[in-house]
Image (cartoon, rainbow, N blue to C red; front, side, top):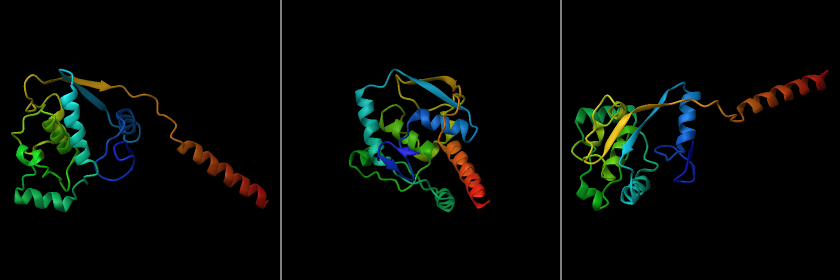
Length: 174
């Protein structure tokens, strides 16, 4: 998918159009999508912090399985202290999606920074689990995003073109 921060397609962490990402997960992978409303509404301070986190984390690669296993066996803590973040000593080599979301929300001041980034996994963001949310922030219940009809991504048109081309070639050979 297109990375809107980098302005190109790239591997690793990316900033996507939410609608496009949800539709891809629903239509290509058959997944259900949910959202949770954050209250109160995010302000300029939080948005500025989010933009700094995106600037730093965009393009961070996802860990390999051997790297993940080694990290887990060593008990390495990927958590970065607020002091190190303020000094700019935060360029993680690799991170999972949920870790990146957790780090970003922590830097925005929404989540408390008492747990390591590795504590976050996709299940932590479900309504059945608790997050270390700072006052006055809170998350609402999960709301399912109803699937929209799939948009034509051009693949069907290419298939028709290939079939038409093959038919034209067969006709020309006769």
